[in-house]
Length: 403
Image (cartoon, rainbow, N blue to C red; front, side):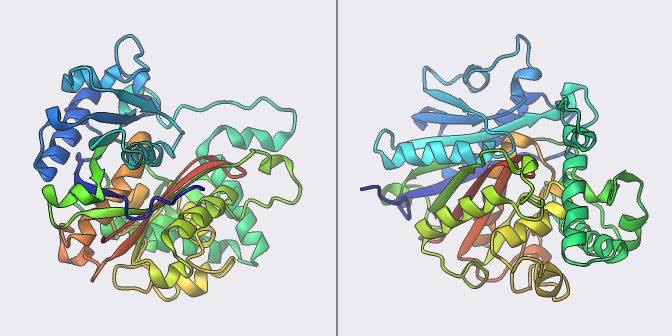
């Protein structure tokens, strides 16, 4: 019979680069920054690491020769014949790298491993994420060629389903972006460190209605890394380690956009992954049991729908249960994206999942960089990664907490 992962594996060190337009560094510099910071945090050396999981989607596009193997990392860090497994699962890549490292430890294959995610998107030479045109005859399919187009459809569908006027809907989304920038401005490693007002968000240049400039996350460079071991070995490295409580990885069959019963207002893969992770972690009431959530807010509407799909509030009740009560602020009932989120901290695809866990790890250790971001008494947190588009998602949910 299958066994759960709860409390079998510990995170004993983490590192995260400055996120942003890193013209000062190439992808190998970012790998080195995150890896060496994680090792220093754990009090280990690279030679102590027995296996590594490298998560990157576009790393092969920004190095000579289009490297698509683990040698991108091994040549950078000069690891000597250590196994490096390269994983990619769209924007869920970071969660996938952590998951692979965790299960290898639980299986007893290794004693000390690293998971590292990295992306150097600014070097691709494209203004947004590389996009694939879906050539279909149906006129709305063109919107599925871009992230803003996909999520804009979700936003308008949500407004229509729950009876929000365009003005009401835009204001709810604007308040999410204001919150993201409030915390990003207070996070020294964040990409976009500037506060914005509701009026600025609403009046910003339109990208894909109703999503304006401040509703969309930027194109970011960055890397993050974690050092993991089995729980029984954790105290060799530190006392304030955290443990993995549960994982959920779900890939939808991809028929959402084809079905007339799918309305774009919920993330089906997120719901499935959340149920897996909650069952493994023993969580029955996430709103009451979780102390914080770092979720995939590539767009403001993504935070809204993900909050409902992670069961942090009821479907269609985000305004009443989260926004109106400011429940998603650090001193609220359900803190969400106190790092600044993907919207303000940044979203280097392969790095985001590990970076979200990095925020929870630091919050548990009471090491948030500024008191205005520190959540009181964090014991349990959730990181949520998803890739693809509404109706065709792969999603990863990672729950970590105190032993």
